[in-house]
Length: 316
Length: 316
Image (cartoon, rainbow over the protein chains, first blue to last red):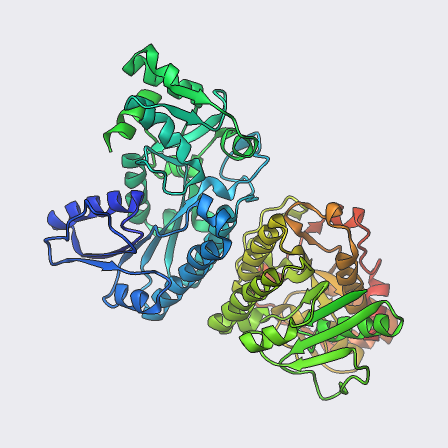
């Protein structure tokens, strides 16, 4: 039975993945679960189950890495990372965590010899500005954020470890995952979450892209399902390069507001103020038509339609 | 006037680059030249010119890195690297030098604040097997050697440093550079050099690809000219991504032998024995038609024809 490590297990996506894995553990489908992060949040109680181990430490610390990997592992969800805004603001930190500590994790896992499945949270930030008119499985990656460059470099390194037979890597490129709780955790794309959450909860929201700006969206539950599905796939089924885009719902900011108005009343629109910022428009408001043939074929699914997406986004 | 650092300055390409730069120094076109490598070879005398500094040290050593960069730098030729065969055989070493020490060099240069021009020796190994039917400036990189994966990861990181304005990076993808001296220095493609040098010098040569196997070739003098030209280009002229293929002459092993026979007599063919190895054929004997529009436009040139290539290859 499966022994699992989750890095970044205290983060927005990590907490949701950990919660789902704890359900699997209780259902007898997992053997052990190790959670690693700097912080786990005040709301999260110490796990009652002795098979769940929580390590509060920095992934960059070799001792933490050794502790997190001291027992054999079958699956690693590597979700720890410095988000896009912070990786722009503090380049050295982004480099240390997103690249160097990630490679140190791969090297540690290689040294242990078990060839675990490693699901890495990559990002659509591997695509840079100007965004192309359409994106599919063959689109070249030309990142124009340090976050995206770091994710792309790691995708390449992970594919090489996989080719060597040392890790069984799967890099899943995540779109904007909604709705992150306020305050934003440093993802430049977090405004997509604000745009859904804030007016829905009766608050004013400032949107840094115009109403025609298009986003790729996935709810947190659909994201968690995608990450777990990525771990469950047979290695032979994986797309070449072992990195792929998850299906995402494409919607404009205006369409999101319209959908929220249908749900919460037309007055909601008055709580949304568009203040487009040029740099945000270029990277975050021009997401083109997306074809995800590989992921579709492998059974990955987005939320289906905007109504369901908003439902799912407001549920977490 | 220009202050220059060359890493890997004791290697096959590094020695030739350093020799050319010393000529420039003596002609008054350079201000200083720092050469870094583990070894400089028995034939190379200590430079008489006080403006040439030679550091015999490991790039992975932070003290060596600090010493090599203690004076301000305008141009860095980063040629140090673990070659393809060794990077396959000793993965950790390749990772340490080709990725981690290279990033440490970039970080050191960033900390110094001068935004030097950084010419990196990348490689056509960024393209993996199965090689596509044609390669041009838009071909995706899907490395299937650790060497190629490491080079590609660094290209992406270098482009990001350049976007940030911290380095002025130029990653030049080198084809097979001929004719390397025997013994081979660990490049898997070194057989191309053996195929030219050994029979030309009257020795028997075993070729690990068949006579129809096609190579991309560039002589050492043309390679040096390309690297220096890459450093001289204005940043605004560089191709997007700041990584590009050098023009190379495409020739089959059989065509090379035919050309050598024209020069050294038909008996030469008897000194070449083809013993194709499947893994070598896939990566090294299927180089397709190459279009290098970006490099052509920027004034990069290959040797012109096979007769000139052999001339130039045998001259060094």
